[in-house]
Amino acid sequence: MRTRSAGAILSGCPGQVAPGVRPDPSGPRRCASMARATMAVAAIRYHRPDMNARIAPIAAAAIPGPAGAARLPRITVAAVVPDDGRFLFVEERVRGALVVNQPAGHLDPGESLVDAALRETLEETGWRIEVTGLIAIYHWPDPPDRKPVLRFTFAARPLAHDPALPLDAGIVRPLWLTPAELVDGRHRLRSPLVERSVRDFLAGARAPLALLASISA
Image (cartoon, rainbow, N blue to C red; front, side):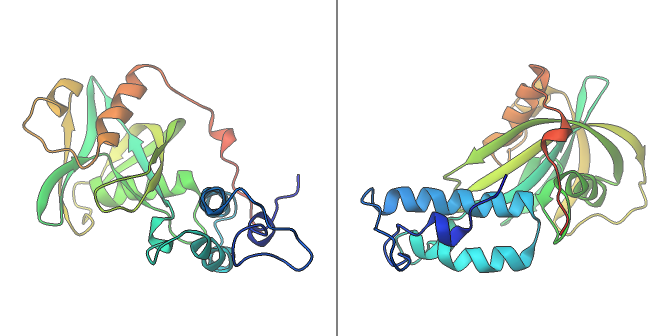
């Protein structure tokens, strides 16, 4: 199946009308939504910085306001790692606050979503894991920093721990908590996605990893 380019998708947007193409009267709101979707598909399907660089200016121009580019969703990954009734988390400092999160982070250039989850978990906790399924893709459109998030959250199992491995900057320590301990008021959660991911895991939410095909050029 052929994927339409960002230029083709946005051909009806104000300021992005191709020669001979009639403008779409549905307005910039529809264009902004399609621009965000285009960026997400490009980042997920291709993992190609050169492609994202070509699409980003078109997508940002379609979103009203000077902060248009900043409102495109960030693609992140996270791992839910259970072991004997407890789950693996990280305690980290974010903008001066001590918060709890799953091992999580952004994709590196050329990296698959699963590989990103493996790497982030190792770098933040010292744990090597095996990813076993996809719990959910969470869209958080309005976080406090106003930068929307598209988070791919994976189920995984722990394999081995290297306590001597240096952890990422900002990480205070890895810790294991039960679901009840996570929400007992002693820990500040980095986002509502932390508790939601555990809850969905316990409810049995799983999708096969085959849904996330990584295509190389």
